[in-house]
Image 1 (cartoon, rainbow, N blue to C red):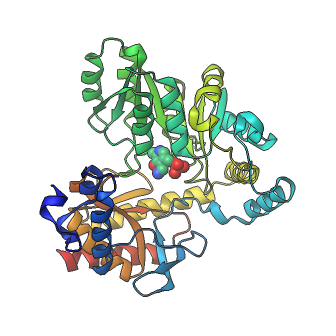
Image 2 (cartoon, rainbow, N blue to C red):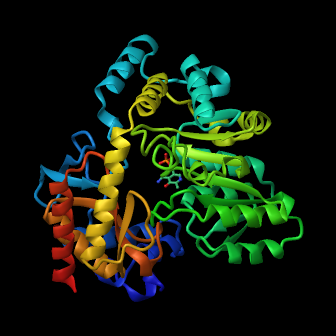
Length: 425
Ligand code: PMP
C-alpha cells in the first residue's frame, strides 16, 4: 500500500496496518516513512496496543516490575517473557563471582578480542564450552546474534548457497545475506523438501544447511535424524543453532544434537548465553581448524568489543552449578509439560511445541493487539509476536517457561489468556 497516496499524515488508523507495511514502504524521501510510522505508533499508544519497550526495574524473575505507560507508574507483572529458563540470572553464587571479577578486572573488556580484549577468563570459557559441547574448540561472541552473523558471513562467499529452514532466526538470514550468499529455504522441519532443494544445487559441498535445535518462535525441535541423513546424501554442511536447547535438551544438557545422539554429524554448532544461562554472549563450537579460521575472519567477533570478563566468570559459574545440580532443569520440564497440557486442554493452538517455548497462536495482527492490550492490563507479560519475527497470519503470544514459575502463576497465566481470548472472539 502506498502510505503517501492513501493516508494523510496525522490521520492514520493503526488498525489498517501491520509493521510489515512500514518495513517495506519506500517513500520519495529516505525519512518519509518515519513520519508515517510516528503516526502509526502514536495511534497504537492511544489505543493501548503498544506493549513493547517498557522499562523494567527489577530482576527478570517470575514476577517483575515494569513501567506501565498507560498508568504512568511501575507495577508488578507475571513474567512469561524472559528467557531466564533455569533461573540463573540472579543466582547468589553467580552474582558473588561477578562482583569479585569486577573488583579485579573492572567493568568491561574495552577492546576487540584480537587486540587487547581477550582475557584469561574468555579463554577459560572457550575451553569449558568446547569441553561441555564435546567439540575441539569454541569461540565466544558478544551476542548469539553476532555468532550466527560472524560464522555464516565468514564461511560463505558470494554466490554460495545457504539453505535455511524457513523459520530460521533473523541472525541466520542476516549472516547469509551479509556474505552475499544465495538464500534458499525449505519448508519448516521438512526433510523431504530439503532433499528437493539440495537436489537442484550443482555443488552441494559449498552449501550450508541451517536448522535450530528448538525453534525460537514455535518451540518445536528439529527433525535432526532425517535432516542429517539428507545433508549427508548430498555432502552439504550443517549449522545447528542450539540457542533455546542448550542446558535444556540432551542427557547432559548439550542440546538437541545430544538428545538425538548426533553430535558428531553437526559441522558447526552455535548458541547463546542469553537464554538458559541467564546472561549475555554467544558461541560457536566445532573443530579447531574451523574455529581458528573464524577467530580471524568472523567480522562480528573481530570488529566488536569482547565479552566482559565478569560476564565470562558468571557463565563459568553457571556451567559449574548446572553440572552439579539438575533440580532447576527438572523443575523447568515439569513446568513446561504442565503448561503445554493446560493450554491444550483449554483449547488453544500451541502448534508443535515440545519445549519450554510455547506459542499460543492468535492469527491476525488486529486480534493480537486486542489480546495483548487485555493481558497487559491484567498484569501478564508474554512475548507479543508479530512481523518480522513471524508472518502476519501466524501472530501469537509466546510464553517462555521458567523453573521459577509456581503452579499458581502458571494457572493465572492460563486464566488471563483464556479471558482475553473470550473477550476478543
Ligand atoms: N538464535 C536464535 C535461535 C535465537 O532465538 C536468538 C535470540 N532470540 C539468537 C540466535 C540470538 O541470540 P542473542 O539474543 O544472544 O543475540
